[in-house]
Length: 174
Image (cartoon, rainbow, N blue to C red; front, top):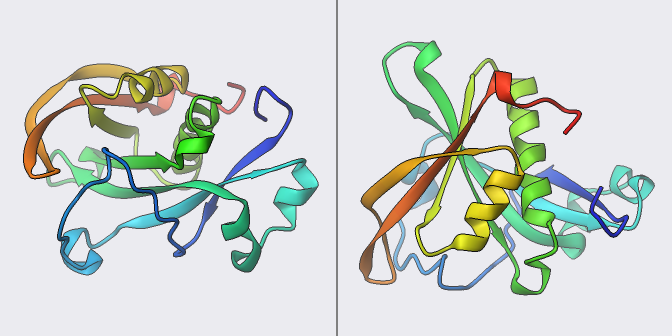
């Protein structure tokens, strides 16, 4: 639940919500199948109450969407125990600064821990995106370090800050 009493859900869907801002200026992109073979997507949806969330369908959730998330596997070694999830979030400008990002990121981390055996969920954001850094901390993630020149966006290289949470550090009670 959001601070104002509305409900938020992370709705698995192949539907896309176009969010254009300085953080999503990717330029030409490879087709998804070539970019990340196991990319997953979800819409961030807000509704007045839990009953409205429960009745959502792919056809109705796009109208209630305030942003989108995607996640994919990352590997830190050849075995299953060295796999983790990495995700990103993008909220439409009118919905930022309301706590929705922190709630959505927490919900996705809880879902990924409940649905898979991976023990690590991570996210990164631009070093200048202070609002997203605060949102990740509020969602229970820990700052781990800076990835220098890791992202090419807006015709330039950008440093990212890496955040992560481990299975034993998060629970569904908030």
